[in-house]
Length: 178
Image (cartoon, one colour):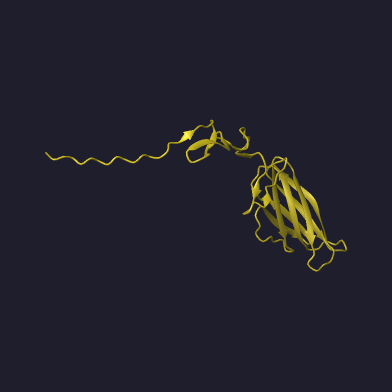
């Protein structure tokens, strides 16, 4: 009778995992074989870092560092704001910058419309700074705001040093409460 060759025994799988965790906390390895809670909390709807009670899709409690070397802090505020900034040329063009469009309505008169999708539940605030290509004095004012929950526009008038409406390049920053 022919004898069957014995099969080699499988090698052990290695160390078994151990440790524990808490419900809704994302697990992390604390060493090669031990799992524990991380700082990330996920309740299936919202994710929190540094909080077990996230109140929005992504809720971070603490400072946020940005940039390839962590050189910059994330902006923070007590309100949920949409910030749009841009530069408008003499002829009303804007280098295809995102978040707004511009219409030139007359000499030194422009209408800036925020094109980021609403809804906006609050108000709009904007600051305008004129730029003079030839070094002469220039000024700019916001003459009106329109809009509300469906979007915002503001009218800008630019002037030369004599106070006459004049085509001028200008920069703006607009903040809208969401």
